[in-house]
Image (cartoon, rainbow, N blue to C red; front, side, top):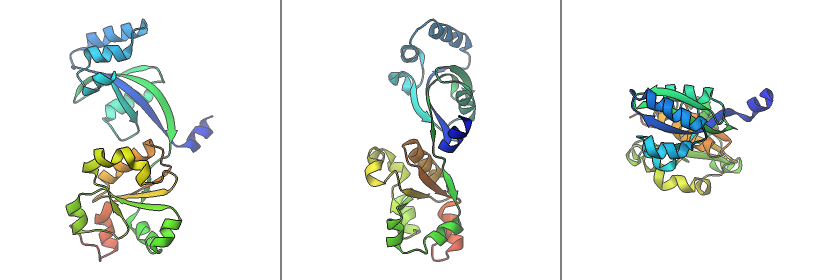
Length: 220
């Protein structure tokens, strides 16, 4: 079973939480007692949580490593499905419930040199091989320095294009994601693997690193 899970990829957990003040540990105790007695966590979240997720019963969605507060992640990943955990972050005291778990593809790292080697292939060959190139920077950055073949999907416009991402990109193909230094592209890459994409690569160091491999691309 362990081997099968390892082959399937990284563990992700679907979580809900109730956000309380740091001084409300006694209320957290009370809520945990009610849940243990059969009360609905979702109803208690709607009643007590200070987070905007309260209207959804506290649900935050799928959580993967490196995508949220470290203290929150540590508690959530240590809890079993159906279990409760606590974590304190800069936002306050979180009472966390793990709703589901799944094992998903891991984001791979692609060096600037490896990207340059990949792009030596003609565009039609890359398309035949299912390679999809995505740049998540802003329009002004793309106008300042760009790599031919990348389509622009600014992370700042996430709400506009995210609902139709599987129409824009093929989940079964390889997706290479680029930004300025590799931070925004990592966020995009994590979003893709959480939504069923199985071959996602983040360009380490972003276009800044690529510019040092390919001098035709300006450094900014």
